[in-house]
Length: 425
Length: 87
Image (cartoon, rainbow over all chains, first blue to last red; front, side, top):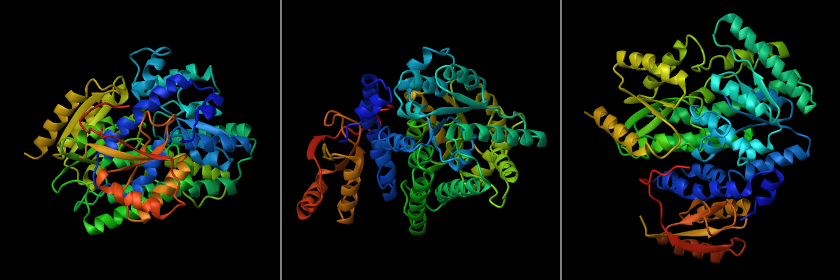
């Protein structure tokens, strides 16, 4: 197998520690993914990507840098990829979904910080994530207090630009976000050395919209009630990888998968037995390789058919207006699209509850699991309103809190099994 | 679930993906899997084959000399969806 150690060493990574992470992936991926029967053929692409997830894409990004391109590492669905792509840069997601990175994060952060933030900083400071290492600049955003302070710590070690996310959704907030995107564009122009033109931005908007359309086709196929053409785990994997991949290739792979799923729906080909309970998962994002919750649900007699979260519908729904021809109009269109996302950082955030209810009905779910990572106060507080809205409509909901460790897996499994049994009662 | 499983090891992801596609086009049942730890020096892909499907895969490999791979290993099948051990 291609030895990536030289590449990782060139990125300044801790090879010995990183090898420990590489050691656990084959077993975990085998248990969780390769144990499934009847998977869509086109999931092979995603299995391929995971198998060399710290090799193939980082190597491509290094090649881009050799030709003068810049790599922007991002943490959140609010950062507009379109700006970076229009200036010839690449956007990559960053590591943050494994307990492996948490101890290194706890060296620089309080223990009582959410595992996503701890893992992210741990991956950076532990030098065990090639995406952190290859990025020329990080782009953060003020979507929670933990991240805001974490960016200060990160920024002391590598250039970190923070976008100031509005906390409300009034017209002046959308205006403010358009201004924030314009300020970000100026930073991207400086870093890439490329001027942002309406032509390039228009092309980038169409490209990222094409990616969203392709991913959304997969989600659309999951609405089928006659069968469940793809497991929630597989759909989650597709979404997680989308944050890292080249957008055109991502769209191509998702369209091929969607073609197959649409045929499966027509043929009635399901990966679960008839009558399997349909679950919508909502809450904090599930960064790769966080597959724990989906795996427990799908080995407890239920199937995940939709994720209302940043690694879910928020990433694929809503398109940017493609008709604008001036930078001013395009930046405004970007602001309007990104502000449609209903993150729990907003107050009030009735839109998220409306989204959950809408999606629960559209995907014909039997129940909702509202999951937040420990110490994610924003999502935890919203649980009450989510539960009340779902209960009003007779949709059962289970609220859980978890982290990246294996410690609570047995307890979670017991609770989820009981919830699924209750759905069938 | 079979007690053992075969892994076709490859020298690069590019080679592995080409081989996987060729095997699928030849009608062989196979899956892409991370290369088993201990059998390679680095992360990367392999092609996982159930014992019942291995004769067809070997026949396909024999029939087309252009299909390159490193070697084939048979290992204990340790896949356990109830292990609850995550990354």
